[in-house]
Image (tube, rainbow, N blue to C red; front, side, top):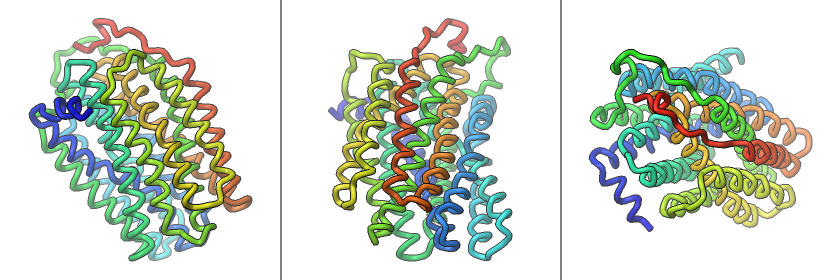
Length: 398
């Protein structure tokens, strides 16, 4: 099964840039949870913690498409280092603001700066793979590999930030996220041999059109699934605390991600007869169905098992969506197209986390899992309308 992965990683420079991107993406699984742990520890309110986290992810969503356009226009090696440096400064100041009890508005401002500056490494590494590979089957394998590495991020990140925040200091988890983001992004951007050409370096011509019907449909699917992710994350932290085992929250979220990791490995190794649209439709439905039992689980070990099984639907769904974008979006606008999907996810995380935090404060964790269920059902409904158009010669960006 691993032969297909070995072939794509054997390409010159592939293992190096994919590994660097893995480290660079750790903040995406650590910062939101780290903010919740830090702010709740300082204020005692999950509602406030969810709101600060929502500000961070909303700012990220608002600027993700701009990041994608800048990367396509000026190149990864130019844009990514500047963005991660601003992210680090904003996150560090936010931690100081919380710990020093500065006016709350400053906490929101610095959280917004950090979110707005978080670079689109996930979209950039997939664009790099698309530039490096020609065979569609190898591209699917590479996208599956990155989906698996995304899940490695979400297995390692929550556990790491929770252990550091609960066993050492709430600031320690966010500090680890900051350092990993800086080191990984600078290492990724430094590998210019495999970097796609910037659009400004290409001959002037007509800007290829974006297939908005496809991209916006997938963005809405990602929006609803993002709400599922945000609600499930905050609710799982609250579930662990209600069980008197706050430290186990990261492990529960890691079990969820581990299920997705396993499914992603299988997805990349199989030569699928069905198109990515089919995997998107069935996968999004399975994600929704997996949320239903969580409202009735009271045991921590059983919750880990249910989350593990539920996670099996995540990677195939997201691989299907990314593959549809790669097949339908012009190559010279691919980072922008993938950033739009990422925008949908993070834009959904914010309301999902905030609404779930409100429900937790008033009705408890079990009831709050219904927020994730509703998000999943909406996503499954919209996914039924997604279709990949054929890429025209103009749209290829060649």
